Amino acid sequence: MQTRYLFLLRFILPLVDLLMLNAVYLISFKFESYLHSTGAFELQKHFLMICNLVWLVNSFVFGLYGENGANKTEKIYRATWKTFIGHFVLFTIYLFFSKAVEFPRSFIIIFYLVLLLALVFNRFFGTLFQYILIKRFKLTKKVAIMGNNYTAARLKKYIKLQRNIDFYGFIGTHDGKFSNDDGELHDDTIQQISEAVKAGVKDLYVCIPPEKMEDMKSLIYEADKRLLRLKFIPDIFAAVAASYTMSYMAGEFPVITIRNEPLELMSNRFKKRAFDITFSILVVIFLLSWLYPIIAILIKLESSGPVLFKQQRSGRNDIPFWCYKFRSMRNNTTHSTQATKHDMRITKIGRILRKTSLDELPQFLNVIQGKMSVVGPRPHMLKHTDEYRSIIDKFMVRHFCKPGITGFAQVNGFRGETKVTKDMENRVENDIYYVENWTLMWDVKIIFLTIINVIRGEDNAF
Image 1 (cartoon, rainbow, N blue to C red):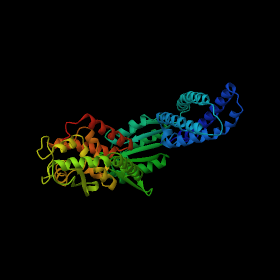
Image 2: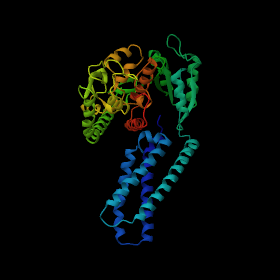
Image 3: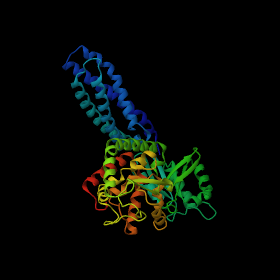
Image 4: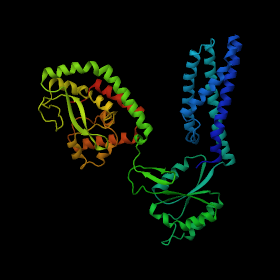
């Protein structure tokens, strides 16, 4: 729904910002030269090029002049603030480490104070100018909607929030039936289309079920006759309960994806894997390297058997893998059932390990192997996977990503023994929410919350 104004804004905004940046730099330069007239400072004019490059790099990183950024005023404000902070950090570091000549520190204060004020006035008057242009010169595109369903209602709500779009109204009957059984448009519908075109409507968004697409020949004919562009939006909400996204394969075939999975993008998977390897190696070097021998000796002193306990659990795409833990139970006892609060199988050192979650530390080796992630849905025993997949809706969805040492469900208190089915349902609900809304910073937050919970102590850790 882009208008000429929004298209031009993508080019006008960076041009105005660069002119403003250079003007502020030169004004600050002249003012500083007036306060401290040093010959050496004259050599600093070449830093103006660096100043511009740093601004352009930061604006690219934070999407200040991108297509999405120019469409929303609040996005421009947010990206501007991030670009300003990024410029301050990078340019200041560059100036301080530059060995060309001594750079007056007061210049930095003057420059960024003036730049901040200039940006505030720039964005304020830019928003005011945009408002005046849209209202006075009507730089909006008038659109209408055809359809009486959930998708049409959502589309109306979205359009009403867009300043660059003028919503004309709905076309068609109240029941949403704008054609007869033969696919011919009703006379009332044709009349409404004619009136809409005369009123300046350029685009008509048609929200219909996919099976009705073949009945649109008559509508296409009437629209072509009146130079009215049709935009078909399939109303599939009734058929699809989950949220969905649409994309195009080879730029030709529309693909409807039922579930949003950020980790399906290779770039996101790369970032998560890089973080997992880095974090796990640091844990192994600085924690597990000296703690492993101590825990191993304590486990051996209390009971005979191996130091590590390994068990097959369900991994990504339901592929089994061997999950490692410090052994917290007596050897030769069954591990096919969940541990309970006063489980007699748990040793004294094992109870401490479980309470502090130290028994999970060997799973960082699983992370390095690529079988697990630091953050993700907790892996279950194969027996429990087979049991819950048949009684809990969407249970297997949590296996779309790698299991984790900690997870969103765990920091929300859904860990340990699941006494009733509702406990597992809550855990699965949190796991699916994580799968559908993953971000790298969210992983970091979950790790911090996990550490806080370990220090504070958890009732369900046993």
